[in-house]
Length: 169
Image (cartoon, rainbow, N blue to C red):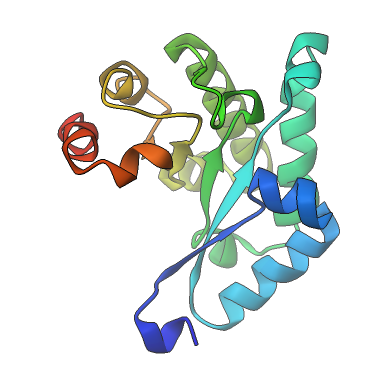
């Protein structure tokens, strides 16, 4: 149905799906497989809650999400994946990770991908930031070396703000 509507990408693992519908890493691995079988590109969301961030286990938490849901893929399959890092504590709260916090996690994700798939695939994998991107923070977030773009939520509903976010590239 999505393909017939001209959809190319499918968001999987969004924090609200994980929380409200109990989507597990194993279920998401199956969904990733299905999306790839249909010739669509998964945008795989990962991220941590505020308590996990405050405990200092956020990198391990995100590494576990990615490993459990994506590392069964072949390098060829994985080349179709887009990753969206979404610090749950910043979604819809008006809080945003600092550019340094975003860069730190994006670099950790890229390092994990390099360990498993090699540097070429890691460097070619788009890693988006998705935690309350807005016109005021887009330039500083998108200027980070490992932040390849944004997965924009509420700000995409305000045309003038969304245009300013797009101009941040």
